[in-house]
Length: 91
Image (tube, rainbow, N blue to C red; front, side, top):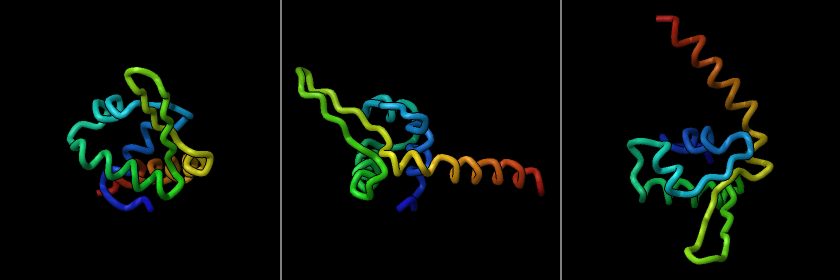
C-alpha cells in the first residue's frame, strides 16, 4: 500500500489532520508530476488511507486528508523517520 517514491511524502504533508488542495500538494512536493500525484492519491484513496472531500461550489473545491486509519500510521512512520535519521550518521 505504501510502495513507491511519493506516498510517504504525501502522507507527511497530510499528517496532523491537514486538509490540502491538489495544488497545495503539488507545490509542496517538488519533482512530482501531476499525473503521478493523481495516481498516488487515487491509490491511497482506494486503500482507505486518504479521503477526497469535494465541496460542491463554483469553482469546485477538492481537498485531500487522511482517514482515521491513515492518521494512525503517523506514529509508525515517525518512528521510521527517527530511525533513519539516527542511522544516517553511521557511515
